[in-house]
Amino acid sequence: MAARVGLPQQALLASVLARSPSRSPARLPYPPLLPLLLPTYRRSISASADAGLQNLRRRRPFATRAMSQRSEAAGSPYAAELAAAKKAVSLAARLCQTVQQEIEQSDVQSKADKSPVTVADYGSQILVSLVLNMEVTSGSFSMVAEEDSEDLRKDGAGEILERITDLVNETLAEDASFNILLSQEGILSAIDSGKSEGGPSGRHWVLDPIDGTKGFLRGGQYAIALALLDEGKVVLGVLGCPNLPLSSISNLNSSSSGDQIGALFSATIGCGAEVQSLDGSPPQKISVCSTDNPVNASFFESYEGAHTMHDLTGSIAEKLGVQAPPVRIDSQAKYGALARGDGAIYLRFPYKGYREKIWDHAAGAIVVTEAGGLVTDASGNDLDFSKGRFLDLDTGIIATNKQLMPSLLKAVQEAIKEKDQVPSPL
Image 1 (cartoon, one colour):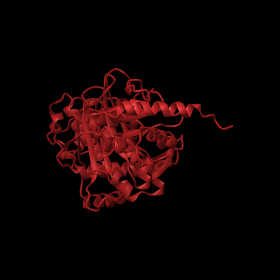
Image 2 (cartoon, helix red, strand yellow; image 1 turned 135 degrees about the horizontal axis):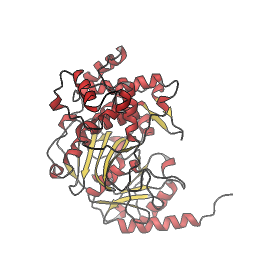
Image 3 (cartoon, rainbow, N blue to C red; image 1 turned 90 degrees about the vertical axis):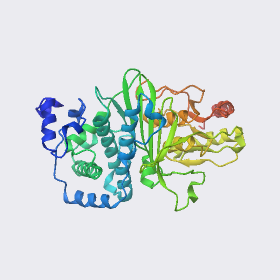
Image 4 (tube, helix red, strand yellow; image 1 turned 180 degrees about the vertical axis):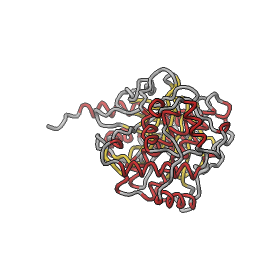
């Protein structure tokens, strides 16, 4: 990409710095890969974008620069990566909230698989890619992410591309951490920095820019989910859940108006899991619930029936003796809620033929395991994130505490066996 701009890297860097006189070169940690996100330059924000920026400034901002609160993870070998990940997710959450509050029909498109994608999905991916490149990348950058720019490069996509560009630049300008703005080509390049295939070697960031897009469109739960793989193992994860109460969601539908909304979950391998508010409160240690009696357990499952077989999960709950009705919410927010003890069990059993993507589980899984829980497939095998963009697993995904896992696995396998024995309708 540097060749396309016609400048060697150092000259390109100098040209960007020259356009950003208020930013000292010593304070601008551009990594070697940043030219892949370019051409990047100062640009005039349109009148509509400028109006949007004024609206943003009237809102209480997320404290992306307050994410460096002291925690146990500060002494880990991934401390810098965790700080950058929290900053990236918080900045993306700000953009997503802006879009959700003012979403227009033109902000939503359908992908080839008929699933929805919004300007916020793209904007979130762009901001996360940019922050990670600016903050921590010192060598090659690899990110496995859900979105790509193919549809935005088609004829007729100019309006939505301009909308994404304005949203990203408004968010960057309001945050003021980075004194740069992106061109449309820079926007497209940033999206496509997520095309890595991952694998068992090296480091790979894993991103779902909006997990739970349908929930996002309904005004419900969604999550910005970011994880880091190192030699095939998930070593850190961050979940930004802008609509999740900071306190328990045990009774999600009757939360009081005084409840603080917006939770940021984080975990680093060997350092435990934490939660803090998206506007920068000190992180608090969290742990899964300790119940060992299924009768006292509650369980999470997907809101969308297309994402899990509710008849199968109902059978599992019955075999366990679970008496509480399921708590159905969108996205990896379920992992965060489970990690802090809001419920005891998470069940996910998609229909046959569905292949799980690593970005749908990497961040959430480490948050739960570092909170003292277990996350496995239906046979009790650990999830393997080293195989590329997809998870190869048996039937479904379950998560709970260590006390309940043996009885949960037994109930899962019995329910699956019974379901398999039922003859298919002709």
